[in-house]
Length: 450
Image 1 (cartoon, rainbow, N blue to C red):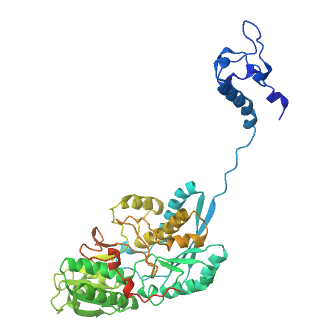
Image 2: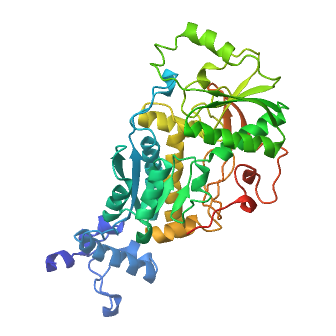
Image 3: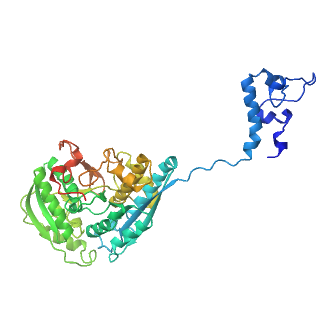
């Protein structure tokens, strides 16, 4: 620093001190004792100030030009938290409804919105979240893909994979300390006999969905069910969950029938006229029932049942009144603002898989904020801990079941236009949480986390 900048006269200080100061007044220079300091102050305004305030103003004026030349202190770099997204881009059968056509960004769009939300909070906690997407073909090795993400420093992985490939990925990275968040597979076996300590489940199980539906049907006193089951493995698993739910809540399946998938070109081979004639015949001669319940995860026939059955009865399950973790029509508990932000980001409506991916990334963000750490181990420890909870626009806080790492959550019941109800229903009580009336409870579990 040049001495010329420090040796300023009082006459040069007015703008810095906010007072008028000169070396002399009209009455001439005034002598001050040497003890007054570095500069001799003659201005009457400064002389009227207390010694402490006068000294403070002097120091401010002296240091201002020095500090002006000094660069500001550099802020600490934010801690980076990497999140992976592993999903399969399988070719799916053409759905019955055009509204159900898959989108290339199903799931990943929800995760991206959640990353934005995490980074909004991260600006205050000095944390920054990133998302690394890895798409797989049905023939790709899921285990190798998971290892690839871990090799890039990603230990928190959102996964939308079928159950066998999900287990393979989880087992491949178990020793690395990585954790997968299951957002797509609803298999109860993943939370029971095949449960893993490095696999957290956000997607609800088939049993949770079936129990949510059963509670409402029993509450409505529609207790006699006619069950129609598809011919694919997933259809049978959902049918098993519906049978369990019926026995659990006091409903009775009075008849069952299997709808065989004969293939075909769907919309061209299954025109309105053919379906209108086929479905009444298929559902004819059923025992007296209150509601037709369909188990059709493959989306082969259930969409054709409403208004076409032989008897004038409501349809539920895979068509009609459907249980789901999220729906584009959900607008309660602040859900509209989330729906609008998603629409702005993705230019489409939010699906269940989008919400499940959003929730998984938000769980990671909440864990990072609460643990005040970017380390995956500390984040997961908080998520698995007793104080963890997450808000997800469903009317109550969601928590994690410690016996199988399944996220407790209400289940929406919708008809494609509105949300008809939300389960658990009133009157279905539990000693710990009413949400544990949905799915396998602690006394029923076969899970031994390893």
